[in-house]
Every structure is written in structure tokens, then in C-alpha cells.
Length: 78
Ligand SMILES: [Zn+2]
Image 1 (cartoon, helix red, strand yellow):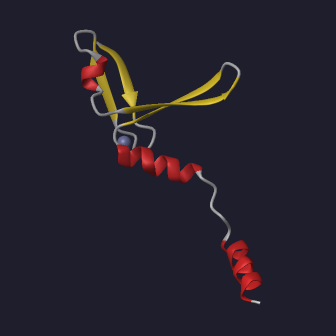
Image 2: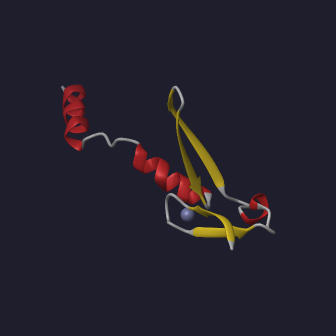
């Protein structure tokens, strides 16, 4: 019987560990992120590698619309 499991928030990789196994041993190399959103509001995310964390973090950053960058470029060109 698996005691628990951990799913990578980015690639979906799943690791199960039984009672006999130490989670810290099975989850070696994994990264656990806590996103504080306010009072008693915390989102926890698990990632199996730095590249998964990086990919997820990049997707959380809002992209600057290209049209906005273009208009900035036109302003400074004058
Ligand atoms: Zn992953």
C-alpha cells in the first residue's frame, strides 16, 4: 500500500512511497514550493527538477504584449 504520492506540478511525473520508505529519500532532488497568498492561504507545488520548476515559474510570469513593446520602441525612436 503506498503511503503517499507526490506529483510534479509541471510534467506530471508521479512518485509513490510506501510506509517503509522515507519520503525525503524517495523525493531526493524534488523541490517543494509554498506560494503564500495571504492569511492562511497557501498553495503548495511540487517539482521533480529545477527545469520543471523553471518552466512552471516562466508560465506564471505574464508576458508583455509585443504591441506594447513596439509602441515603446517608436516613442524612443523619435
Ligand atoms: Zn517534473
